[in-house]
Image (cartoon, rainbow, N blue to C red; front, side, top):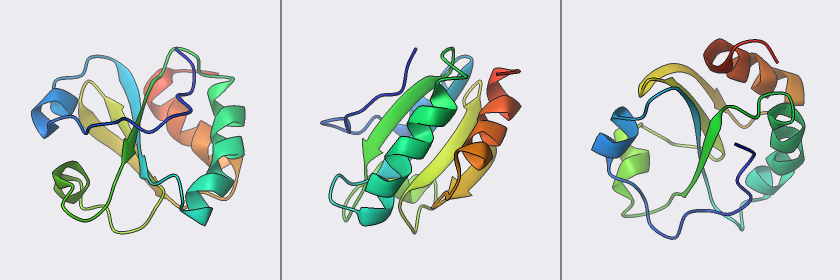
Length: 110
């Protein structure tokens, strides 16, 4: 799988996220968030080395339950999952390397 460029039109249920198999990155943010926009190039660079990791891009905001269930407070928040379990979290990444380090924890060597 490759990096997903678009935010999902609807959010998944927490049960669906918890039931995921394998490595996945859940990205919470919004298309208009400057921090989220700045992170996109970093994510693309990091994902180039981890094509096997599933990427779920979830638009977050008021009234969105999935982000609240993960206690998301700032965007973007990256949740690194292995088998539906949180392994690592990164808030407002500033380098591709820190994203790649999180991906390595769930997706093996890049």
